[in-house]
Image (cartoon, rainbow, N blue to C red; front, side, top):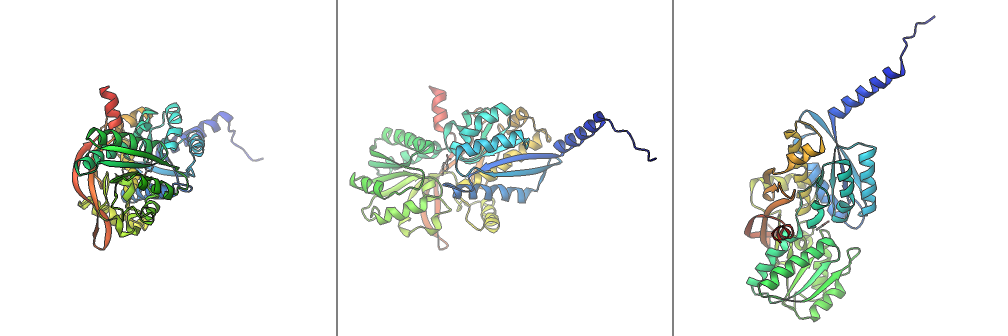
Length: 391
Ligand code: PHB
């Protein structure tokens, strides 16, 4: 008769516990939820381009732990983003989350709070996103950071009557709010604010209405991926020929779409947080390596992914691989470093990004259209949060 060792249920349980424990300790799981299909696919492609480049450059191990990325597609639908976050937290037991566009980040925020899961907002440009959960940190930008600066610049440079064309969702509303305040305070007048649906936009009828109002300048916010169509319809409706100037946050001359735009976009002035033409060795290397890996020019969205991974890696180094939510968030607060976009930091008070905003003009360089920077505003904070603080 064969002698069989007696294995008790308790022993099996203890053994599997140890195996799981070891696994949990050796691997850090990062759940990344981005819009890889649907309305804002162009955004998802850029942010993942940045994430993948960072991991390729720095490797898949931090503080002696293996990094496992679990990438999910929210299909540009906030309810899907929420369900995916729930599954990632409950089933996959991710240690960290990375979120994308505003509606998705809003939908995920309560789950981040409940699960105490540190979450890096890689795309959303809406001020309140970081206020929705104490476990959220932003590496992207806010529309307010850019819109106030271009408002003042426009007023100082001859703009008097402006029509606003904004994509009709939260970041668009904030672009309009902050621009209107700074432009009117500097003596300018807003003739009209036109709101264009986010999904499948047709700008033509709005551009016709804008033209009829007879402004000297159009202030425009459309999300990354829609600027190409906007620029095409701007020319088709003859606004360039009518001598109407175009200004806005950086999204309207997005580096992803810019190379394929008509040359009538030349001379357009925007305030943005990143230009692929930013003249530093760090950025030149970033652009070259991003193009090699992803086959496209990086735009401002890509930096939210690239720098978002940097925040995660650096925080893990500081905690020596401890993934406790409070420990990681506190390690993320106050981080500062040189990004391809310039010097940036995470405001320890608000968990929001502080970064330079550059005024740029579209020019042709080396045979291609670029945003060429000509003025810098250092270490700009989100103005909507700053205003709340002083009120
Ligand atoms: C956002 O999700 O808030 C967002 C996305 C794309 C943009 C700007 C803002 O270009």
